[in-house]
Image (cartoon, rainbow, N blue to C red; front, side):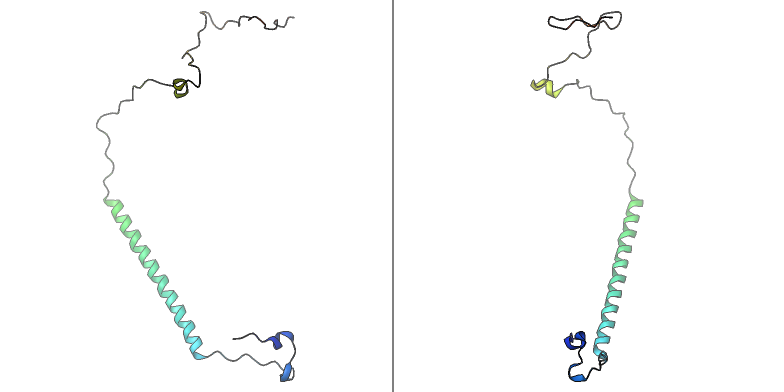
Length: 121
């Protein structure tokens, strides 16, 4: 079906202003559309059937799988020493594992040379 420029412009041209009805579709065009529709429906039915087969096989195989057995021996934690990779390569200074505190709790920090005097009352 082509595009009619004269009809689009609204000019009647040689037809005298009367608009003609579009020609009726041919029987071959209608049969082609029916065939394409039926082929599409058949393809969808085949895809649904294939998906159903795949899902049923997967469910059947899942039911036959043996559950994972529990270990007979409790796993022992790895007794590897805790290491700091950055300290090992020398990027971060090696810090002691625990901060040294005097017995009796936390003490006030000792002033160093060049420090400002503590604020007074």
